[in-house]
Length: 398
Image (tube, rainbow, N blue to C red; front, side, top):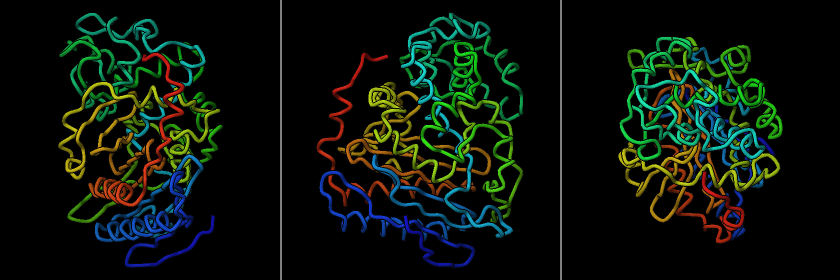
């Protein structure tokens, strides 16, 4: 792809890779290029208005990457501009990777969606029958336990072993599989499940099964791999109305499946392409369909700022949120840890997706992502053949 430098305004250098967006149905390059042009202009405008230290976005289709935009710098010293290979913490967007790896291993026969968690993690104990919790409940945020159980202990830097000791105090607020209960430490029980069955590390398997076959060259798991990469975006928090560069906190890296992945815009574009069926040799269509099938309702998502004017229905699948935006459906996840925000979303119907990464905690990321979908739904025609491949390969629901 040909790269061009658009402009330098104030604190921001905006670099864009330009290529016409793809639409499998109407083939109208002019329409797709106009969508790219309008969204790029909007992205540039918002990051400048919000004085965002650094940001990047990527638009992708099943055929590959079609647009990458970067803005700003890795920190407030303004010595190093963000580029397509600058890695960010993607926080809870990591859950989409955990679900993808889990589904691949299940398809290889390592374990099953309906297996009991205690079968692999015998120390998992609650004030009740822990045997009711299945692997699909952990990845589907439907364990029936109080939401965000002991996230405060993650913030305090306690190791997972100490946090798991506290689970014995937990009681069910509903039967597993019957209500939405967002988790981080409990979601990350999938790590010992995977490591017990395969006798290999979670990080090793993520590299072998996901990052390497998808050619995600700068993606990684963990604190050390992030800070050792000289091209990483440093975190920023607001202090007296200005963004301040702060240290990378290692706490949420202790729950790697929930929040431990690092990736660049280029990496995220490749991940998007795989979700839309572009790499069936790595992630098969039936795997994608399983992960993005709506399961428990997430009613509160309908009240999310910027999204609430668009969402008509909301569910959690397995590692993915599933939003109904009027007549359209997207798979989505957001991420937020100290100093970083991330969004990823894609449409099976329109065969297009976007990821946005920031090294600040600003809420403008939600505004930017929703604006993209408003533009896409207005300007692109849906792929009338979308979903037929998935429908033909559906398997029994886990």
